[in-house]
Image (cartoon, rainbow, N blue to C red; front, side, top):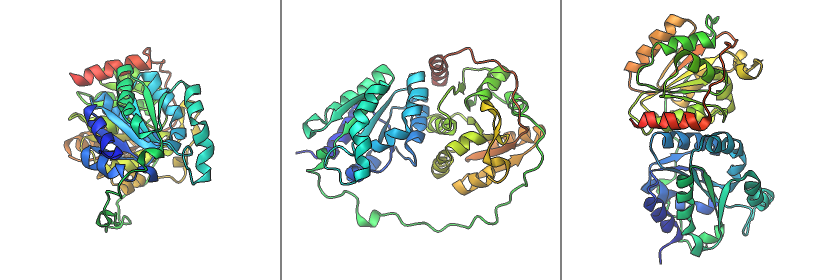
Length: 380
């Protein structure tokens, strides 16, 4: 008899899954090592971050799937609406269903008991797999997600794994922290007085664009890029705050093109996990422009932590970014982008800016139109 874990692997392969984005759960500890051995795997640090990575991967032609603990669906609801549903981006989600069957952790129970009703209220498709005989429904979940370009959650009961063999992970495979140089001697340019607004910086960047992919942060940054240099290879985010670098990273994993992300200080603070994950995987074709005006420019210019203490370049270095720079002037920006595009390696440019927004108009495209146009352009 085939073990349930091996059946999951078989179903994923039959449905041509080529990226597995995972987070641990004790109930699937036997499954996760098999997934790592069988698939291109992305080990996440936050579930919502995985939605951005998988969206980017799909835009670049991949067929991703998420494997997570069901509790994590709670921090994904907003992004499922503003990214996947609004833009018609498919994602099958295998969720180890906690708080449902013989749950020993009391804090898991309230959310688990109400999760099906929450998904129903949100209009998010889900399938309950509560018996081993129903595991074949996972194939239907994957096919539905991709056929209808929507999220579909498989709630997989721990009961499925009761007949599992001992862990496939050997003791000699347990992680051991690696020695590495201390970061105290990193050369850092002091944060000086900014000379450009975000619009002026984006205007400079617009003159440098050729065949690069550009992913622009939601709100005013996307509107300013559209006004300066609209092109099909621009992906404008209209929602899912904090996921712009995640989407750019996902794209970079499945294209040979250079990928440029227009980040913001508020967005980085909203989801620092993105830079942590990117730094771990070291994509060679990704450059992040951290446009730091020390405020939430799209919501009234309330100040962010970068106004006083948070140092984005220092944080990027601690995450493992090979090439970093801090610039304040327009000429510096052009020169540094040219320099980094010649290098092989992950890059981040911390662009220190004055606050203020341009009067750019709303983008006259819907999220679905932006997504369709971008995906078609990237496939050429």
